[in-house]
Length: 161
Image 1: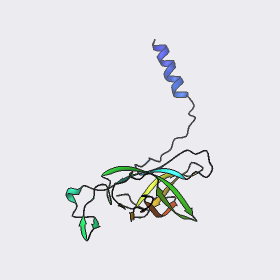
Image 2 (image 1 turned 60 degrees about the vertical axis):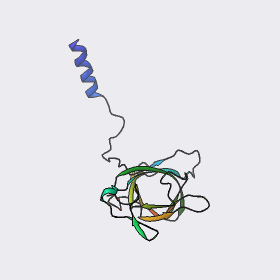
Image 3 (image 1 turned 120 degrees about the horizontal axis):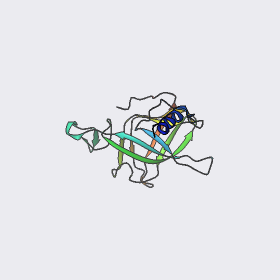
Image 4 (image 1 turned 30 degrees about the horizontal axis):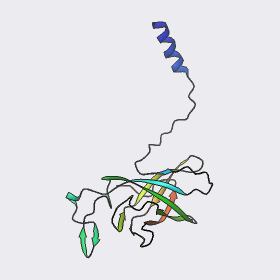
C-alpha cells in the first residue's frame, strides 16, 4: 500500500504541465465575450462593481434639481451587476449600447463610474477596456443606454474604487 502511494506521489510530481500558469488575477470588473459564429461578433457582457452604501451618501445624482442617492450607481464597489452590450467601433474610440432594457436599472438614467475592465485580446493577452465616468440616459425609442468614449489599453486607466 505504501509503495503504491509513493509511486502515485512520484508520478504526480513528475507529471508534465500542459497549460501555462498566469499571474494575472481576474478582476470582478471584466468583459465576458459571447462566442459568435461570425468574425464580426461584437456582443459582450460587462461585469462591473459599482455604487456605494446610501447610509453614508448625502446625494450623488442630481434629479429634478435635488441631489439624491440612487442605489447601485456611481462610485464604489457596493453592487455587482452585469450588462449585455453591443459595441460600435469608430477608430480607436468606440461605444457600447446595452441590449437588455433593464439589466442595469429601471431608471431612465444611469451614473456610470470610470472603470477599467479585464479583457483578452484576440491573441489571449490581458488588456483593459476602459469606460470613462458618464451619466447616460435611456434612448426614448429603444430604451437602451449607450456608453461613449471607450478605449483599450495595456494597463488600467482607472483605479476602480
